[in-house]
Length: 103
Ligand SMILES: [Zn+2]
Image (cartoon, rainbow, N blue to C red):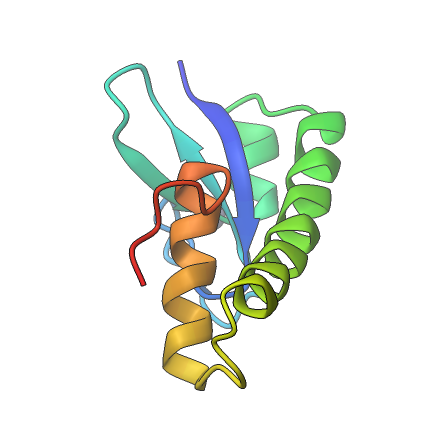
């Protein structure tokens, strides 16, 4: 049984069907915390994620981006490089926040 954890625009290929050039993918996790990146069609039709879960994931992704900017401001990191931003965003998406993120 997989649950939807988040959405990300950093992975653009569906691991389920191999479809590429997606706007983004949904990060699903199973009971062993294995991670899967699926496009919306596969997440919805093949893995039973409901539309509310998917919408919620999109919302969380936007929140994660805001979270990274806020973290950078709080810690006076100045302008983040693109790599920094993406690394922090990936962390935030997988861990639901930057609580234990090491600068
Ligand atoms: Zn797919």
